Amino acid sequence: MAEAGKPEKTSKGTTSVEVEIFGTVYPVRGEHDREYLEKLADVVDHKMREIGSHVPTVDTGKIAILVALNLADELLQCTQQQEGERVQIMEKVAELTGELTQALNS
Image (tube, rainbow, N blue to C red; front, side):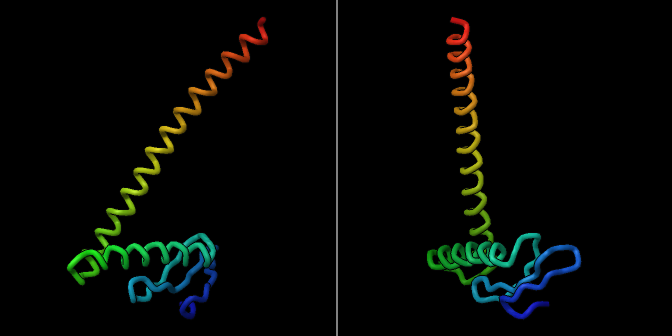
């Protein structure tokens, strides 16, 4: 394993790095570069600390579940917003295509 915080390239093109989340060091492996993997860990660590400061438990497993639910909620909201925007864009494209067709036929 790589030294804490130092990336290690594996034979399959993945990067391994050790990250600290909520006071515990974890080995993480992914197809992205070290900076990206560390950013992911920073997001999780921040959420763990944020939620951990608002709940009366010190059970990291329970805090992790709350973090997972929180992140899943954010992801679902973003996905739904993106889908709504996609529909609006398609409607606008159809509207503009109609206007352009009408202008070209005039």
